[in-house]
Amino acid sequence: NSAPVLTLDGPGGAGKGTISRLVAERLGWHLLDSGALYRLTALAAGKHGVALDDEAGLARVAATLDVVFVAENEATTVLLEGDDATTTIRTEQVGDAASRVAALPAVRQALLQRQRDFRKAPGLVADGRDMGTVVFTDAPLKIFLTASAEERARRRHLQLREAGVDASLSSLLKEIQARDARDMQRSVAPLKPADDAITLDTTRLTIPEVVDRLTELLTERG
Ligand code: C5P
Picture 1 (cartoon, protein in one colour):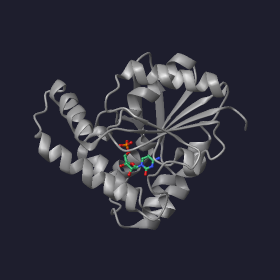
Picture 2 (cartoon, rainbow, N blue to C red):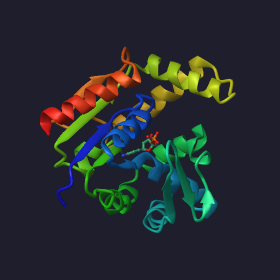
Picture 3 (tube, protein in one colour):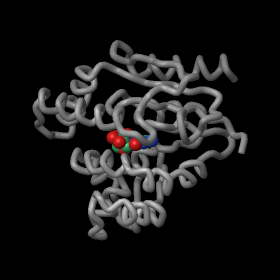
């Protein structure tokens, strides 16, 4: 399979989700939200009463995940076993469970081919933690998107406030730091830039600035 892939890896809250969607839209490429697959695995495990430390059980849940992504203009609806799970998978609770499930090698293995199947012409934007280091090692352009933990907490705070949720900035910062530590310190597919990745710090950049920069880089590498 030789369709081009743009990998976007980095910590939570660096803006990967929004940026990936906008870049994919601009290019007319497919989009893989790999974090959603880990979140869905955690959610499906809860539904079927599989414990978060039952590695074999979780791998089975991951391998048989019944999920459909329905892309409509701006948003993507996520159906898990036919039920709308779009907002449920975005909660902190599911995110936390996802990062625990994602530390298990058998779960990562079970999701590997499913992720690679997203690679189709004319191209794929792949958003995650190990897109450039494990899943699409031959991608022609690999980006590591970061921002300071403080800035990521601030963005999350704003996002939650717009959704009418009142969360404290300091507790959000603590959660972000704990999630970073778990993602970076795990032994399997830890969060780190690929050797051939370009690191882009978005702390002082707007979303349109990042999207422009990425399309520029793609044209240069084209
Ligand atoms: O990106 P998102 O916050 O949706 O990811 C949820 C969790 O899934 C992350 O904290 C991380 O532990 C895990 N993940 C991963 N590998 C990926 C994508 C997400 O381990 N490629």
